[in-house]
Amino acid sequence: MVVVFNSTFAKVKDIRSLSKEQLIAECEAMGEKKFRANQLWEWIWLKSARTFDEMTNLSLSFRAKLNESYAILGMTIANSQKSSDGTIKYAFRLNDGFLVEGVLIPTSERVTACISSQVGCSLSCTFCATGFLKRERNLRADEMYDQVAILKQEAQKEYGINLSNVVLMGMGEPLLNYANVMSGIERITSIDGLGMSPQRITLSTAGIAKMIKKLGDDGARFNLALSLHSANNEQRSKIMPITDSNSLEDLIDALNYFYDKTGTRVTLEYCVINDINDDPFEAEELVAFCRRIKCKVNLIEYNPIDLAEFISSSAEKIQRFADYLEKNKIIVNIRRSRGKDIDAACGQLANKLT
Image (cartoon, rainbow, N blue to C red; front, side, top):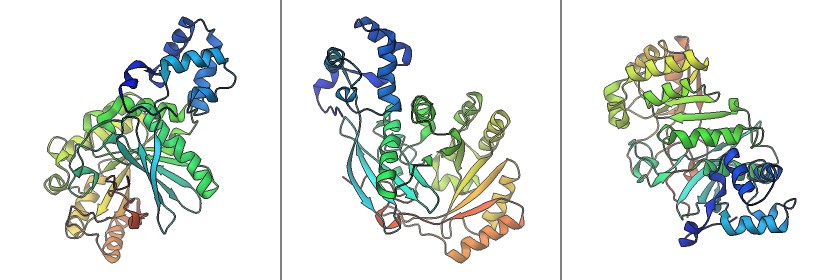
C-alpha cells in the first residue's frame, strides 16, 4: 500500500477518486485500451489491490506509468486489541497520519464490522467518547471501503468465517459526510466491489432530518438506525445537542418520509442510562414516539466513558423498560455490551489505540 505523509502526495493523483468513466479516459490518455481500464478497476475495487505491482495482468510499462502518476492512498492497521468476549478493536492509520477506529464483533452465527465515517465528530453528544474529540475531517469513500475490506480479511483470519454485516456506527456522523458515505456504500455493495448485500449494511445517525429525507429521495436500499436515547425533546437536548436543530417532530416527519420512499422500517437505538432516560415516564414517551412511525427498538446497555459520569441502568431496570415496550406492542430487543473491557463498545471509540 502507498502511504503518503509528505509533499509527495501533491505530485500524484489518488486513483480511487476517479469514476469508471474518468479512469477509462485517463487510461486512454496514456495510450492504453479501454479493457485495460476495466482490468485496473477490477484490481482496485473487486480485488482490493494495495499496490499497482500486484496487478500482474497489466504490462510492466503500464504499471510503471501508473506508479509514476498515481497512488492508492490506503490505510493500514496501526494497532489492535482483543476483548475477552472475542471482539477486536482496530486503530487504522490514514495516509495523512490521522487515526480512526473500527471494530469486529463476532457471534456464534455472524461477524459484524463497525466502521467510522469521520475523523472525530462535531456533534458533542455528552455520553459518547467520540463526541469529545475534535472533528478533523471527513473520511473519503475509499477509506470507508478500506475499513470493510481490511475487516473482511481479519474476520477470516481471526474467526474463520465471512464478514456478514457492516454498521456505520463508529466515529463520526455519517449524514454529515453524505456524498462520501453514499459512494463508499456503493463500492462496498457493488458487484464489481465487495459485493455485500445492502440489506446487511446499517447506517446509524444522531438525527439530521433533512438528510434522512434525502436518503429517501435517493432510494437508499440499506438499513437506517436512529440514535434516539430519549423521546423527550428537553431531555434529549441535554445529552444530544443536535436536538436543538432537529427536534423529535422533525425526526418523526423525516422518518415517515423515509419509510414512504423506501419501505424500510427504522431501528431506534436507545442506550439506557441510569436516572437519565430509564424511568416510567421516559418509557411512556418512547411508546408514544414509536406509535407515530414504523420502527423497532434496540435497548442498549450503556458503556461508561472516562469523560462523563453516566452509568448504565441495572439489568432489572432495562428488563422492566423492555417489558413495558412489549406490553404496548413495540418490537424490542435488548443488546448487551460487547468489547467493553477494551473500550470498543457502543459510544466508547476515542482513539485510545495508537
